Length: 274
Image (tube, rainbow, N blue to C red; front, side):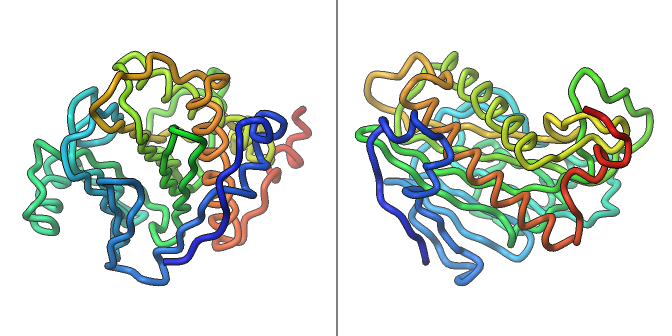
């Protein structure tokens, strides 16, 4: 395992969210595929050839928009699975269950939530951060060929282009269900900010992208103790989460652009949109 960085106080975090790059721990699981990495106490992760598996030592309270195990529930296993770019399964949930049953027979389906992406899981950004009693780990995969501008990009009646941003965030603190949803809001706001800064545009309209048409998110919180009731972007947890998720997304998108030879801002330059 390789990482760099040390923790710092919230003052510098609030002065410049991207200064979080100076103290976020960056894991490099691609150097040791198949090996478990310690992400937080009681939480570990592993990079496989076709997926990322995160395992908790007990069920964590979780909100997920995944293809499997979506909603608010208690989960122990969290999967981000890479599929072929031409994947077009008419029963993706059933096919995902079959895949997980074969790949991870020791992970009960009812304790698992799973996301899906055509992005390379080997290019995922793995980051850890802590400020005092608040700690978290984030794992992000990204493709932006399917980038869209919410409320502007028209509905698609056909299968969308490939390109998905999947964000999994794990919090070393108990949260209320409302705070879990609040955390999803904070992650989404950070995602939109980073895409704008990277000049990612909707390919159809040229407007600044707010995400892609197939994004998914997981936020899981360790049980126990007095739960935090808020996770908005100006709370200590929310500020740390936004900075870390934003930094991880930036790294993942830049890896995608480098690997595919794409250049940010092409659509906006072509259309002259502002």
